[in-house]
Image (cartoon, rainbow, N blue to C red):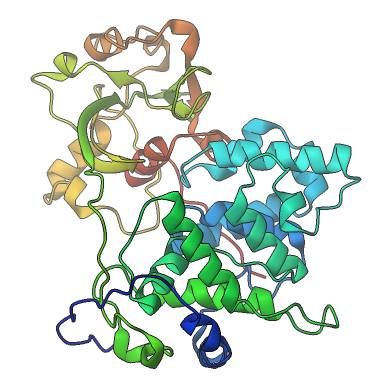
Length: 421
């Protein structure tokens, strides 16, 4: 693997008025340079080179606003559980959401599930082959439709995501323009670079390879900050050669929240108290989470874990509280624990783990044992939204990303191991 070479000071971008015929005239040279680079440097990813439109659709939905490293294992796990479009269509929504847990933006999973059911019911189980037709599926917009059509079916249509837009703006020497006119300008430039569809389907896929190469270039070389210009295959054609002018970004909001981790032993079974979010909630409706607590209820209590968790444009600084008598701690997860969340001394660590448990299961009914009464009684949720769940079943449930993160870090929930054939 080549060492990344960081370029020198970023030059001031040179701006042009309109993307004239220059980009069209250089299209052949651009494609050639990009193609040679992609064949040599493309990352090996499980959804590349597959001959399954459903797998391509799944990967494109998962990759929306989610890091590649996060998607890889979940993609394999999802296909292992739902290997075909029919399997996904026949699944229960909760099964789909459980496998999606941790990827965020759960509406994507719901729309993917509904889309699979629509294809099986209305289209005889066959995905449409063109971008225009693909946009009729639930949850499939212009970007996803173009990606599926070009990668799975070889249609000569441009894919424009944030990475591709950044590459094109820099190549053209343009500032970012968040308007319909600006988006149309980028789309026109992108389409002018896409090669024609292969004359013999199945042998090669120039449009799909080109679109993946453009996205790869933006993801690995033409980075938002400190682009690796000296490694760029189209550096000679670029009018910016550095960072381009961008508009102000929306500031991340911050919010401090508190959740209760109530864990009890029922015989040899470890159970966790979960709360089901309302079906009308604007975020993650119907998902399961650790019960939220009012901030005034936790005054004077010390959290067992502090963790930051981002959802859309908000950073949540979650404090996790637990009360209980000494019990038996669960098997800790095999991965290295978060050292910032666990006290350094061995004695403190033991107290920390033991404090998660109630002494006797018969005392752990809602509102709970005396040891947990103070916090359990202050959970705002109605009793019918709360349930004790076996820790061994947690991986089967549609947990919120924060709940999954906390339960894994504290060793209550095992991290799933994905077997790669």
